[in-house]
Image (tube, rainbow, N blue to C red; front, side, top):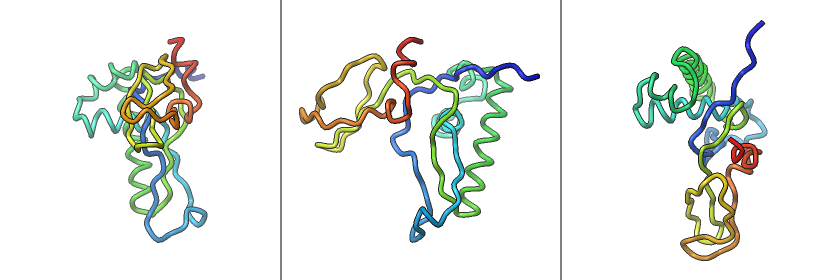
Length: 145
C-alpha cells in the first residue's frame, strides 16, 4: 500500500491556467489536466533551469519523486501539443508559498505574502482584485503552513 501523498510546495499560483488550440471552441476539445505541482516542476526545471535536486528541495519532495512528477507533467504537455487538446492547470496536493493578485482596474499582477490581506491595488488603488490562490481553493490552508 503506497504512503499517503504529502503536500508539495508551490511558489505561487499560475497567472494563466487554460490553454487550447486557436479556432477550436473549448467545448469541442477533450481536456488534459496538469496539476499545480506538475506545473511547478516544469516552471522550476525548464523555465528557471534548476536541477532536479534543487527543484525537489524547493518543492519539499525527494529527487526521485520530483523526477516522476516532472515526467508525468511532460507526458501531459506532449499530449496537449500533439493531439491539440485543452490544457487546464488546477488541483493537486499543494500549498502556495506566496500569493498573486490580479487587478481588474489596471491589469497588473502583483505578488503578496500568502497571509496578507489586500484591499487595493498598489499601482492604481482599485479594489477590483482577483486573489489567484483563492481561485485555486487555497489561502487559509497555506497560511497555516
